[in-house]
Length: 173
Image (tube, rainbow, N blue to C red):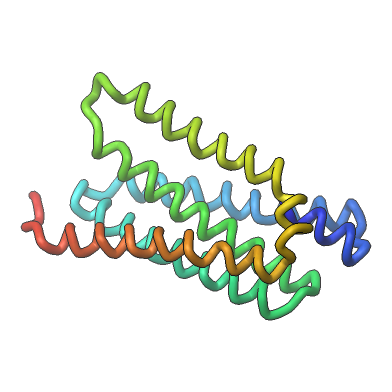
């Protein structure tokens, strides 16, 4: 949500160029949702959990790569590549997290838990989009990217914890 502001204000990027830049990651995300979801449905439960942890680990690494790329240059190519990395990384973490969430509740709690999860995710997206301009103006592009690193670190610790926790238990049939 910050990117269109940045491109239009600092680089005089056209509306058509911004539309393409913002649509491309959404198309990539949509293309990824289908095969990853189908893969999760076809694998046995124990293989799904292992696969999800690999996918989530890739999501964390892609988010780190996004920050590194965003900090290494400020031209349209850097923005586009960083946005793609962010979109795919977010997609992998979202798929992994929501699939793992289904393992944490009883059937009668399904609607409340999934509703709360969806509301939390999308409320966060709304708030970040509302405050993105103020954040960009107040902190600057580099600091804004550096602020993502502690959040990514928390995600990395969570994924590592799940990996080690899973490795400590015997595999189920």
